[in-house]
Amino acid sequence: GGVMASNHVGGLSGAFIPVSEDEGMIAAAEAGVLQLDKLEAKMKSFMETHNIRYPLAQGYGMSEVSAAATFCVNDRYKRGSVGIPCFSTTIGIFDPETGEELGYNTPGEVCITGASMMKGYYNNPEATAEVLDSEGWLNTGDVGHIDDRGYFYITGRRKSVIVTEGGKNVFPEEIEDMFQLFSEIDQILILHLGGDQIIAQHAAVDGHSGVQGVQAGGD
Image (cartoon, rainbow, N blue to C red; front, side, top):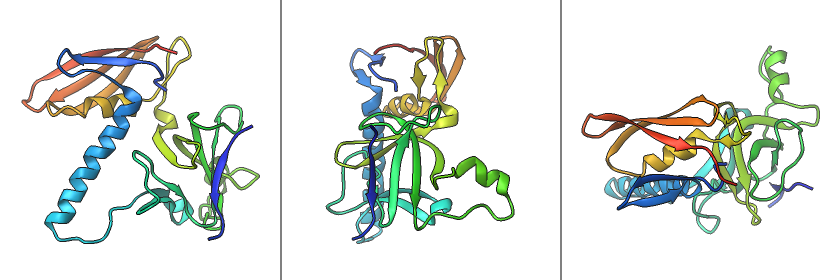
């Protein structure tokens, strides 16, 4: 069976991308976490410089659930995670094709239900039917997973997933996060050329551009 987390009261699996001999190879799954660390360090530095004394809190949400669906602050913090569900909120991870609820550490579509969720889009029943199912779940279109302690991780958008010829699901955001860890790269774009051919078109800080090939594979 699947797992979900609630708070009512109170991949590119196995694939590596070579960058340079000095920097070695970094797993794409770890790259997103490192990128979050980098962003968090910048935010904390900004807050300290401007004498902002409130704690930095990560979270995840959208207007359809009245802003926040998860929170991650103080003792409810875990590296790379957007946190745990807010009060009166239940979140599950589902297979978007079969509707099956998925288990721990298995990527799927993030779905939300709870007291703070919208009843629907104003005067737009068609759009409402596209995101709300008969059981009251909101299909967010975001891809993520939940760990065995109930912490959620967002890895990308369902519409941006690249399905290779061999049936692999590749999340462009994970690859982009990895490349952006390096100070030499200013911008990055992942493109699917068909089959198992994926390239990363990047612009360097010095103004030069280039293409890095990515092999879609691994177990």
